[in-house]
Length: 189
Image 1 (cartoon, rainbow, N blue to C red):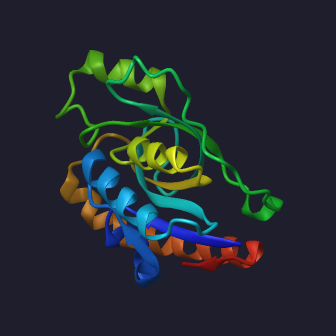
Image 2 (cartoon, rainbow, N blue to C red; image 1 turned 60 degrees about the horizontal axis):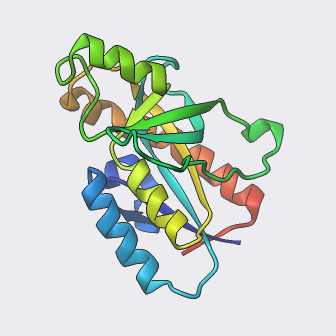
């Protein structure tokens, strides 16, 4: 099995950064990066594994999540559900499952009104800025897409605090990825 590891930025990949592909922050950057990658790898069989940080109102900081569904912010006219694939994992690698809401900005009360934030929380348990675009490109090209995220905040910090936390969180995700890829016998491309 071949796997292409993706994250928005190198800080999220920790010591695994040399083995990752980076999309940049935001949906437009993710779309462009993913299109470039899948174009260069046409005809190859692989699974995209998206790894990164999320804010969450439902899980504590440091929780690794497996994403069951992605909701695209501002796209209430979608006629499809974004349902990532899952690996069959042994119990020791099983993590909580969540619905991810993919928005255009860092999700805090400083960015959104309380009423809008409440509405978003009803649609997702965690939040990022790239997953809906990354998934959409993978699905369009028929590439399996799996997503693991680690909670970096509870929608209560600034981007500066995120930058401080991401280094330690990446170490935890690195350890999980090492066990995951060993279990899968996967080759990283």
